[in-house]
Image (cartoon, rainbow, N blue to C red; front, side):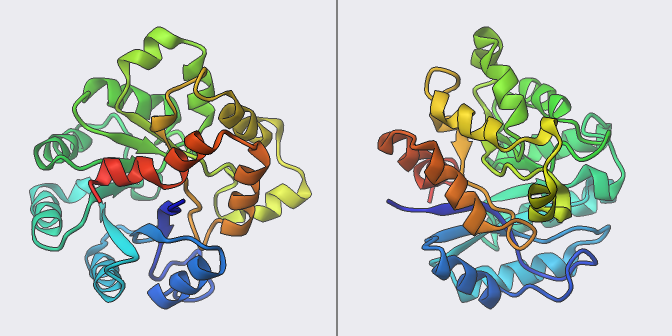
Length: 265
């Protein structure tokens, strides 16, 4: 079974003690039997030009293991849109990553619409860092998916997926909304929150129950494996998935086949 991490980071960040390199990521992937990873620049910005170049260099160095998502700050306007288009057309990037909280704009702000239009034109997905502030609540990302049905919209939280699964008609309308498995929604605290005891609203067991309920709850082709390494812990994410004891056919979709289809790998 191919295992692809649909969201990881390489680069420098004030949230990291040191620069996390492509070599560091590959070592972490090898130790956890992860075949490929989608990589992007870590927060915060506001300007990601140099950070995106580093991601590009990582994907070139490990072209058979890493693919890039262009980290965008839509508040830079047309110049940023042009850079993003070049990144996809000439650099081989496979999608866009948006982080409204760190850049200080709302998901529904007018600056986001041109990004979605460009993604539709280039036929690439947009991954929103959802759920960590009022700037990017999961519900707003779901509304964005409904507003741009031809664009694959991705987000890290499965909480909204659990809720969406309770409304099959609504779920059917938003077939373009894809969810990452990453359950430790404590931001950069990650496993520390887990060890202390997560708040009930962040209970990772909800993800276990959600995965066990597939495909009755939601089309399993809309779920992808994510770790957010180095902020997240692939060892823990993989163990969580293992404990679900989900059907092997569905597991294969979640762990790699879905993101391969989405990114046309």
